[in-house]
Image (tube, rainbow, N blue to C red):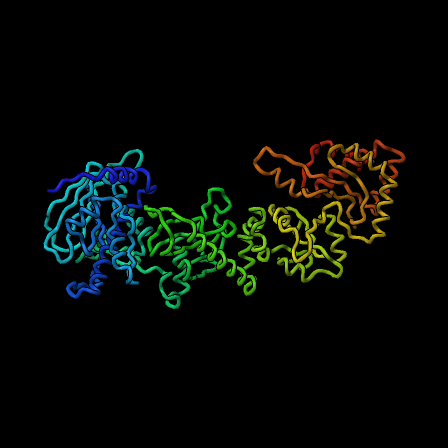
Length: 627
């Protein structure tokens, strides 16, 4: 037996690997299976140029076995195997990658696509193992050797008997404790789940003995547990098959099985790109909003694969936030990984892929909007809010990319329209894009100011999502047309002569308004007559960039910040209430103050705002009605 110690540098690295480099213990199984796959690939590639190597590709396999009594887990392959020297070099020196060396020696051969590169994946098994034995026999050799180690103390290499070439790794599992359940690696269901998650698309069959319940031979109703070898991995990823060979039903089944959705996706699209960064993507737009989509702990991201091996279950850098509803995966041989293949070492390749994926998603949505409007409106009903967030977030950086994907309800058309459609159908003489905000379309439709715009046949966009106004303020304009809130104090609907006449009327009764303003205190900044109401007696308008709806949104947030929009109480100059107020100012100022409070409360209720003193207002209304 040859007993050796790890080099000092290797000891330190081994300690780092066990305690720091890998964040997920399950990864060790992915690494060992990937190494086994590499060993098989090496033997197959050697056979292409060496006539002495006689192998049948269909005979290759990777086996995973476990023994609960011995607490062992075995991963074996019938690949090229290792000699004594290779065991010493590959396993005795951490970061000595046999796969990488093989790749360099055969770098001119395009078909070589081994997975392992860094020579550290094997040591990830020490995260779960108290002892590891590696029994290996080089193809064509009569000798076999056992490499054994309990970790930091070093390793030994000794000759053993082994019938066939290949490598068998036996892991003696640590005992479970309160920090981690190592017993799960001795459960058939757990092992199968981990293998399918990370190594489902290894190109060689991964075989496990699985227990099935079968009818006992010679009986009609007696069953027994039977162990049978089963291939548990798919081997060929659906995204690597010829697109013409994959049916829509297969894509749907892949989506529902992978993402645990009960509905098939609304859209499925696949893309292959070659160039600065080669990759294949398979993307899905869900048919409905996930239950946790708008919760802060929702994790966005596409699965990232490298040559069919999952590197990250969710890579957030592959999706912008405004497309976070997209599910799917990217498979690329070009991404730069760190030595644990868990996180990205560099961003350049991923940034290139992300930009390409983003363009593909946008193109797919534009195509849906143009060619299948009904489907797009269903999609927008689920995820339109996220696109609006995309316009608003990052100080409007992405507004130009997203503005033509937005839909808003049109008062004129009674349906959802794009901003482009709104502008194309503007009334003669209209030079602005008008909008109104509220809780629901029905409530917005009853806002007093809407009536005047309908009368002029001006279209008004109805905003019911709390992010709408914030997004529009980032857009500022569309096709040279500015956005205008019809509830703003400076919106004009009449002629210049009408404006002059109104200004004169307000100046004439400024003392009336001053008294009402004093009565209402800080509730309003001004009281005045208006000519933009038809049947309604009063309304509230706002000054500046902060609207009444924005006030409600910000104050509803779970923060200590409370703001107030600067509001104006406007009274319909043509409504009988205007004459009533004029009369009260001349004859009964006390009564005028009561009317002012009631009218202001009415205006607040119309806007969906609360009343600070509902009991007082209720008593005032009863008092006024009873007279």
